[in-house]
Length: 253
Image 1 (cartoon, one colour):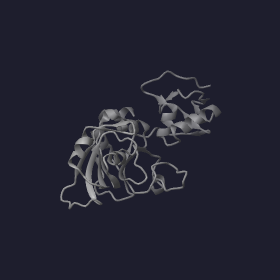
Image 2 (cartoon, helix red, strand yellow):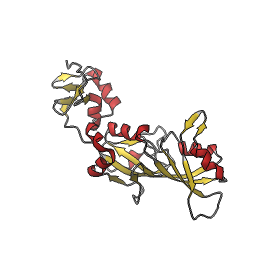
Image 3 (cartoon, rainbow, N blue to C red):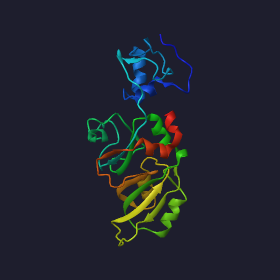
Image 4 (spheres, rainbow, N blue to C red):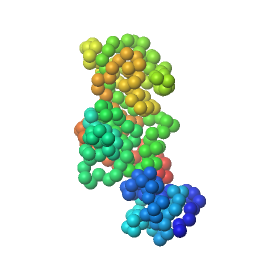
């Protein structure tokens, strides 16, 4: 049987490697191991901590798999009322229902809730996903936010200092009224920026200061902009631009 090998910086765990190839998710790969469905160099894998690279002969259910694909990134303009998940127990449409048939297996970087629209990053690499989501990466997320309620000058200061909602601490949130608006308590547009991206953070923060979010559009994630990308459309980030934005770490993902 294939023995567990020590971690090698030039190799990666079998589940991560196969997930990068789009064979299955890491969890699904790990579930295949006990039944002997995966072999490395002709021997069945018996432990998730088996490390491999492109020099190994790997097969799943007897079928050889190819070389690991390089990390890639796409920009996607998520429509409103679409789930960011592979499937929904309630039968609602998911982002995967909207992708073209030729789209490789991808996973979202962060999430947008059902009603939120705008920029969603997608990648074929679990390593790239984790890197872009790390608080240490510190990338700012910007939103156009339509709210209902009375805007007060001290709201911006309150949010900028950080707040606690239902016992959960939120970091600084920058909120400004978009210029050139007539005051309308039922349609006030704000520019909102934050760096953490916790679950429904913008909606919960606005509710905390007495405002109801009626429309939420993410317009940027770090250096990546929604721009003129049409609703429901995808655009791949070139390898050159991706390297410029995340540097040499791309080699280790």
